[in-house]
Image 1 (cartoon, helix red, strand yellow):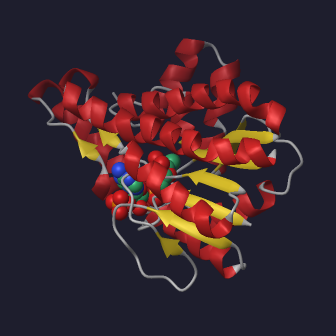
Image 2 (cartoon, rainbow, N blue to C red):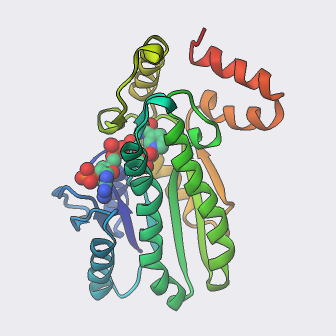
Length: 262
Ligand SMILES: NC(=O)c1ccc[n+]([C@@H]2O[C@H](COP(=O)([O-])OP(=O)(O)OC[C@H]3O[C@@H](n4cnc5c(N)ncnc54)[C@H](OP(=O)(O)O)[C@@H]3O)[C@@H](O)[C@H]2O)c1
């Protein structure tokens, strides 16, 4: 298969690209930094720049003639209080996590529609299902991608193109280093410091990125997809159905306890 994966210079994307490359697939990684790998080819691309996205996809189509799978993985986190977040920070985050992923879908869809076949996985987060304290805009950016995914599924299904989101729990990567970090103001400092330590500890204690690859490998051959899949530790995945079934205030109190908030 020809597989495009975004955000392959580090973390989950790198693990996915190596995994599928080793399995003999033709893998193209799109990230700003070039990485040398025996198993996949990097096309240096900033996915927030639509021209670069179009050029990269054209280059792949010239040699491969078709694209079977797109894994929209490039993304970043953001931490800080809602009140402290600047317009510039919020737009930077949405420009990558939402707009960049949409540009990637739009670039591969013409060829997928023409061949009447294609699969797109948008990497989301378990945190997109709830507004996480001090990560409100990260939750919102991934939640926006979830909703776009739900919508586009209706639109492209006539051409046998399937799209889903894969909501991940904490995965052991350098995401914490690459986050947008809002300047924390004094009123929020104490609560922020506590949660920041907890969220970083969760990432350090997260699942190995290669396990995401093995999960996606099982997902790819499925005949038709659901809109949403969830992968991560039980304690994180369970937060999603609990939110659906528990009374709202009870759920919020549980979340406060999980995040050690007073
Ligand atoms: N790690 C977790 O716990 C976790 C949990 C839930 C969801 N996720 C999601 O999983 C995805 C991967 O995260 P990760 O943990 O692997 O993070 P990471 O290690 O920080 O990797 C992010 C990747 O995105 C690429 N990227 C950033 N901006 C880009 C741009 N403008 N154009 C192209 N590529 C760009 C980076 O490459 P360059 O800098 O070279 O461009 C890098 O390869 C993200 O969407 C994240 O939100 C992660």
